[in-house]
Image 1 (cartoon, one colour):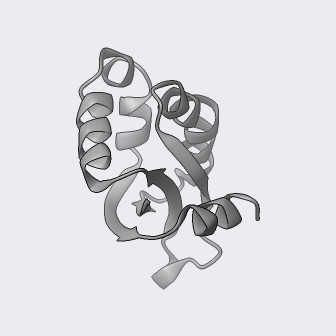
Image 2 (cartoon, rainbow, N blue to C red):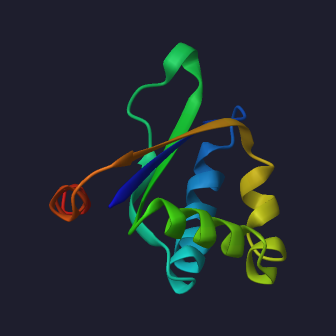
Length: 111
């Protein structure tokens, strides 16, 4: 399994709307497209006073990760859907991907 953790530094004053769009539009769209969302939300720590959020997803392999990312972010549903509402609120983001077990992914998703 590949576990991807994406963190977002948000523009000031945008976290509530970012999280609403993520919860109500982006995550359901990701899941309908077959991407496995493990968790998402607001960071408990505002590093240097910044509003931050995270998205954790799981993939069967690195190849699956690359293929699903390419297909989803190039899709009409994303491009004409919540893309602008999400991207316009992001100051910067950082992504890491790591190899892990299905058990670890399941445990993380059950918290």
